[in-house]
Length: 65
Image 1: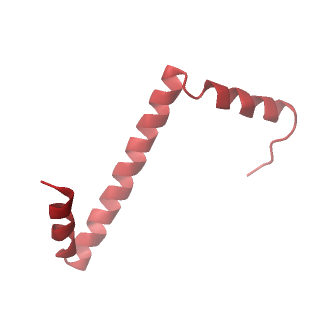
Image 2 (image 1 turned 135 degrees about the horizontal axis):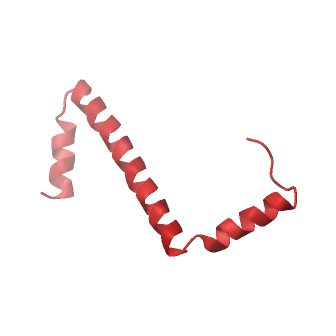
C-alpha cells in the first residue's frame, strides 16, 4: 500500500474513526520517539548533550520547570 492510497482511505473515514486513528498515531509516534531516545542513550549518541546539561545544572544554570 502506498502513502497516497493511505491518504485516500483516511479522507473517507467517518469523524469518529479519524479521531481514533489520530489518537493511535499520536501514541505510536510517541512510542517510536521513546524507543529512539533509548537507543540513542544506549549507543552514546547523546553523551555530549547529557554532559552539557549536567554541567549547566552543576553551575546553577538550571531553572525549575
